[in-house]
Image: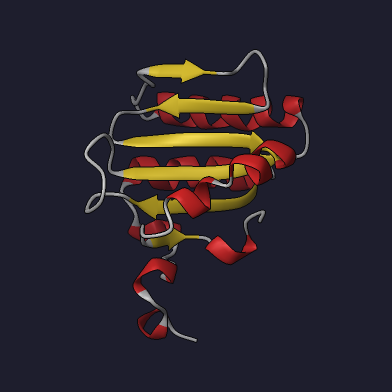
Length: 134
């Protein structure tokens, strides 16, 4: 099925079609085995940020390692987070880059909060909303 035949909330683009900082974040997630990466476009439905990136890790330490990789990759490109929250606990880490937010969860935490459902009207740019935890 081509992207054109998918409903607007289920389109998926390759990371190369995203802004460079989003592409770098997605690449860092993939390189460090982050699970079920999802990028949602909030530009038309929210005023606090343009995009949300979500992914899961298999453990709290894995979540922290994925966050470390994202922060390091973007820092090398001169992009620094405004704020990082939840890193010490490691079950849900929020990294705020103003134009986009990165949420890295343990599988259990992502399944419990299921933010994909909260943002169900947001177009999917990378990933598949259906493959994310239910």
